[in-house]
Image 1 (spheres, rainbow, N blue to C red):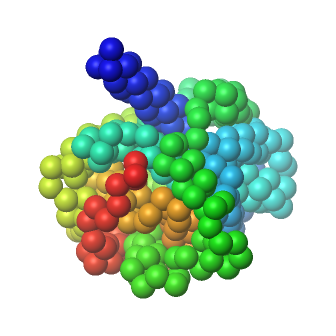
Image 2 (image 1 turned 180 degrees about the horizontal axis):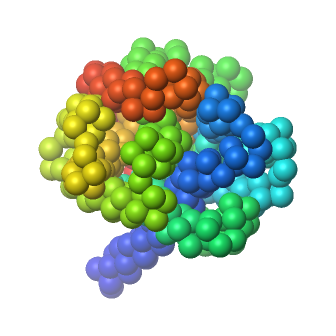
Length: 412
């Protein structure tokens, strides 16, 4: 009888984390689609609103600032109010906000709506934290690596949609379609309970002392280890996100304007790149379980950094597709392990605040990247800007080298 009860509970636990994984995957798919959408529509928005390169870059930077503010507040709220509650509200906010972008008619209107909706996008890093507190320890890196392919899936979905929608229906229709994930927010709200580890931590904190001792940032910065890790992850996130968002904002324009690739072919190249990034993320997760989260992240960042100059200086019309595929794999490796690596760096009581805070302070500072690339594109070329991107990828790997591996089990 005891064995049967144990098996039943094990099956229920298995079903729960699988459900959380599937819904989390769809949430990250929506996140990836939203982030990529701006880069794909940038040329058309520039033409319609009469924007300069710097103004176009400023819209991307404003998005990052909003994401940073939302992520910092969301991380704190997830420790206080719950991971699920914050993810639900964030997903609803950025989905509805993205749909409203299709109704804007000026730089200012677009900027205001984009900033507000980006507050929700910033909280999507907490999807990884939520899933990490459900999945089995022995397969955590692999499962979270697969989870991160949701972002790449979002890129692919929106690139495919844009190839069909943009030429026939215009950029506004693409934004209208992006409001659909608000239905996913409702599904998560009613189907996913708060993780047991969070509930236990919340109950323990209610029994403890109140005041400054329960303040999450006080807990982080009063402890030498958590303070050091918070600073290291802030720097690693700053460098990595400067690279990721710089690429996502300007890669479509680079392929279309500087390499003179037609939009249809460009969409094919980018889909191929992100499909290969799938493989990179899954490989990174698998290797992270068997070897080292830190080692995989560092090698991925350094590999991406060293390969960007190869694309810039040695591309031809014949080899660009192969270079993009190789870079897609390297690009996916650090993304495939960062969720596990960061989540295991902090205790449950401060995990949401620490992950959301360090990641999004880094994101806030990385807001200058699209503007800097826009400036370099005006003065020199987008390719020169991508060399800077390679440099910041390298710095992220160097910084993460000083973060210890597997400090905390996220299910405890």
